[in-house]
Length: 221
Image 1: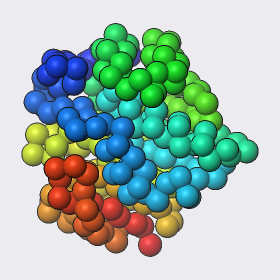
Image 2: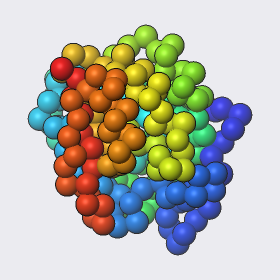
Image 3: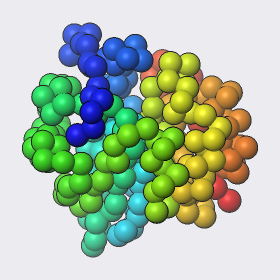
């Protein structure tokens, strides 16, 4: 794992980043949030085919990955989906295990994830080939040699972690997106939408999850 690990504090059973003072997932329902924002926002699982490539800014607890694994398995694809995540401050396996314990519906795959996480940042879960690229995405994404069909933009809130939402990084997201590829984020911040638009995406504000009125979806023409 990277030298700089996540500094986690707990609000009840919910992990909070001490560095960014922001929860890792919705206080309402993290699984439902992932389903609404990242799967729904990228029109998944309808678009899934073998070899479909999902990329993510902010691996966090791995919750988005686990919900994706469930969707891939339910889709019954003939071959695996690829999942690449960029994470600057990886959680310890112990904190990840604690964070995911609140989602009993994911328990089997969560146990697989935690065991794999102890062994490194490249592994396979049912139906999904995973790579977590450690380090600042502003450094690691430009060097990435692939393109994604769908992006989960899941950094901590733009006001708290602006480096993961900068216009330059959104340009790199676009550069590493296949034609017709999509992106989704819980954030409806004007700077985020403008950054995606400037990078070449067609951007729309749509209904958000829970207490958030709006979120952002984007498609690369």
